Image (cartoon, rainbow, N blue to C red; front, side, top):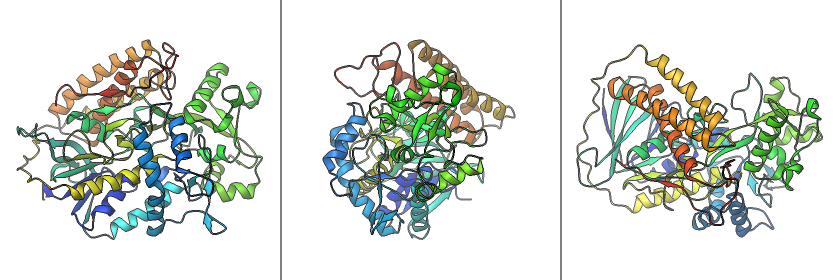
Length: 529
């Protein structure tokens, strides 16, 4: 079996960011896409609401910029925000050319509205936008020469000049675990793009799929890249609360189309959002999630309810067919009864610090999509700005790669696989994974305190020592690699949270309830490479 592969560009991740980049590069570059499960197992396909872009009459680019800045609580980078907003419409047109079947109304794109938006500007495919986009792009990728797919290949680590003993700090490729053969392979390339998504699985309750373990963020940090704004974890206000429903999201568009948040009958059955914000259910996600968290703690509730039953059944079937069907499977008829919901970790607003071409601090290494921190999202991501960021920066990164001359790649050593397999590893990993997700939920969740963060930091330090010992001595597995990455990301989240002595956007501290006059990003720099 070949244990070494050579390509022009390596793309780690197969969501919208990774697939878009591959399609842009394929005409001129030999591209490898590595994904740790199957091609469609990332977060992109679960996006329900849609893609924000100025496509309707009366809407303006400036209005989209301002809505993004308001939601981002003063922390958005203005240049990045303008860059994304201005390039959003052309990327929607690109998806249309590829054949994505966006919802239409009277011959035009149907635009819906979501929380934080002043206009209807969310392009969608009913309530399953991510799946429709992902399916279209996957079909294109599979049919495109010059793109080689490596499914069930898990990123182990990036290979840098520092690790090779070279004077230049550059990324020359990566090691990846082929789960089918159980071998670690070497991938050589002058350009590597991290498109590995976020880190929602660091929390007990999340809307993210099991793949969201912060792999790219952790690998880039270990390779010497800065990370930014990791304390800003967006909790989606409305994840379906049901013992048989895992990670099922109730789209923001349900509130955009008139859904009301109410307490259960045992707590009065009343609508409560107006007591928290004049925008009520259309307030930004951080406001709505904190309001729900407050009401649940105040009344000792397991969940609250989202009621859209005042809309006609035909309207619900047209706009939310997948949500309607999934809830009905679980015995909930949303045309007649409210939907039980809870907040859940949803989106990692921070990540690997990049410029407007997706470049990281390490030459040859790019980060796009949820893995990156471009400055667009600030302290809280505006609804439906994530998928468009994936596409805009995928195109920007590939244009930068096309203009960059590729340096010669030095010989890369094979992975040292003299390590042994440990029979206790699975038990230890399972226990540590469970402990990590529970204390992150309890101590580093929607509302934080200094004491809770100190407790989390103490436990993370203990876990890191234990995991590093396993990693150094034993044969690597996907479970071990994911846990290693999650604990690293948890450390970055806690350190970032401890460094912010104010409450802003998604970071709310009982010890620092005020918001400072000047908004400053959180930037962490590795002390050793």
